[in-house]
Length: 260
Image (tube, rainbow, N blue to C red; front, side, top):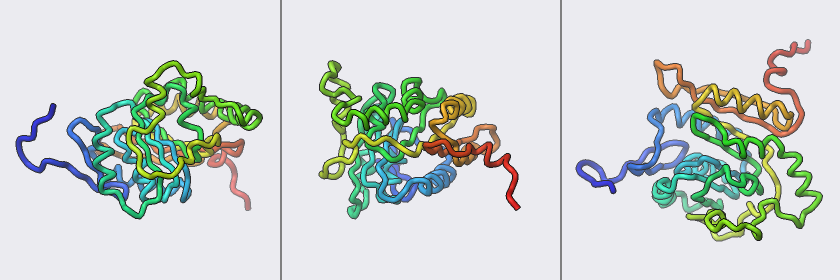
């Protein structure tokens, strides 16, 4: 229980093109200027009207920012910490009324049956803790083409196994804790993401996850950016953009000779 003693009762910040509410128990970036710069860069890699899954979403700042600036048709924010719900709810109170996005926030663990959260998305965004991606999610991303082939060959089958699920709390998580928009969610489709945007605060874990993703040739590293959230330290926030397919990797493109 938090008790207000002095000052404003509510704390708001302007980042990523919208006003963000921060509750006492919610996570917020210390360097909002650097965070805003990263969000602006991230927005450029999300197509207008895309369907987005925001995993490890916290209070949904990234997903909401994309909804406001890229006019996403559908945004799913998945977060394991239930305390983040209040910040999400307060933030959407100031959300532009002109938005036609279907936005949902789910109190759920993205590492449990991750394919359920990936399905129906054009773009998946991951912002894991310093330890990196959970192994179940990493494995799902590594085998995404195989899964997609199974879905296309058996369109009537559901890989999420919702009908046979015996753990009630997982089924409850599939229903949005908070939702904006009354249209049928496009996330019900069985398409899988073509773009993976990885935000990392842990360089060592990112290197491991990146190598694992590239080793299967399911993903190619298209762009990578570094942001100095803590000047004077060696801590770098990484924004990496992966694309599906078997094109040239970032390393190969940079090492290749220029054509005359």
